Every structure is written in C-alpha cells, then in structure tokens.
View (cartoon, rainbow, N blue to C red):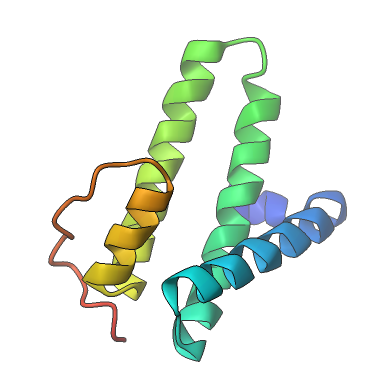
Length: 111
C-alpha cells in the first residue's frame, strides 16, 4: 500500500523531500557510503509515506495507529539491517532512543 501511495503526486513530493533530508542526515551521522545512501533513500521514502498513511487512516484509533507504526518501524529496521554495518545500525538505534541490539544475521551491511 505504501508503494502505491508513494506514487501519488501529493504524497510523493513531500515524502521525497523529507526522505532526502533524513537520508542526508543519516549519511553524515552514520558515515554512510554512496551505495548505502542510494539504498536507504527509497526505504526512508516508503517509511514516511507509510507513516502518513497510518496516521491518516487510523487518526481516530490510537491503539491501532501505534501498533501499525510499530510494525512499520520493525520492517524499516529489518531493511536497515540489510544495508548498514552492525556499528552503523547500533548508532541508528541509539539515536532513535532504542537499546542497542545484536544485529540479525540476515545481512552484513556491505552489499
């Protein structure tokens, strides 16, 4: 659903600008290489579109909205774990106020 909404002109422009800003900030803070930046940009954009959709769709249902947002965040972290090194992932989690966890072995962040 987020991918479908990300193509909508009114969602796409704002999400693209915000995703670019977030990705730039992540690149500076986590010292990302060019490949990581290119792979994170669409993931950040999809996350923002998804959050906007969740907030709009469940604006009157706080519990469902929180659950859906947590589910989206878990998917985002899973994608990030495939792109970032363990050290970068730990820094990202710490900056997001989450305890550092051992990264999943699904990826090494190098490719």
